[in-house]
Image (cartoon, rainbow, N blue to C red; front, side, top):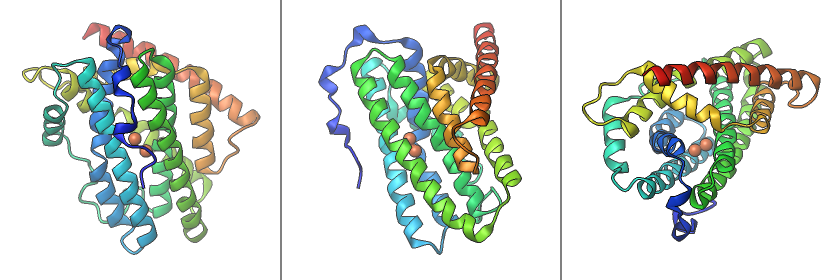
Length: 275
Ligand SMILES: [Fe+2]
Ligand SMILES: [Fe+2]
C-alpha cells in the first residue's frame, strides 16, 4: 500500500517562474537513482530469501522508490520540456549496474549490516528531500519533496525495526556497526549519483567524467542543506548504529559533520567551476 499516488500531486500549480536551474539539475539525477530501486529490491529479496515478511516489505519499499523517481522525472519534464525522463533512464540503465547485482549474500557481511546500510541511505534521503522541499520556491517540487521525505522517514523506521530483530540474533558489535555506517556514507561519492547526474544533464556526445559529475551533483545538493537537516540526518545515523541520537555526543558529531560538509561543498564547487 503506497501512502500517496502521483495523481495526488497538484501538478496544475506548477510555476515556471519559480524554478532554480541548479535544483532542476539534481532532481533529474535523483529521479534516475530512485527509479533504479527495483534492482535493489531484487538484491534485498535474495539476501533475505527465507524471510517472507521482509521480502514483502522490500517489494513495497522498492515500489515506493520507483514512484519517487517517476514523480521527480515528471516534474523535471515540466521544468525542462526538452528533457526526456524515460530516455535518460534508459541511458542510465545501460551504463550503470549496481555493483551488488549478482551477490547472493549481503555485501555488508551480515543481514544486520545490510539493514544498517539501508538505514544510512534513508537517513540521507529523508534529510535530503526535507532540504530540497525547504530550498525550492516552486510549489509542485515542494509538494513532491515533502511527500517523498515522509516516505523516506518511514523507510528508515522499516529497516531500523528489521535491523533490531536481526541484531538480536547476529550480535554485531558497535565498532563493526560504525564501520558499516561510515562505509555506506563514503559510497555516496561513487558512480551511482555521479553517473545519474551525467545521464540527466550531459548531452549524449559528452563523455562521462566522474570527478566533474560528482562535483556537479554534490556542490548543488550540499548547498540545499541547512544545519537542521543535517542535524536530523546525523541523529538517525547515530540511532541506526546504536548511539544516542540526541545529547552532547550527538551535538558534537553534528557540528563536526556540518564543518566537514561545508569544506566538501567548497571543494566540489571549485571542481565544478573548473570543469
Ligand atoms: Fe526514495
Ligand atoms: Fe527510501
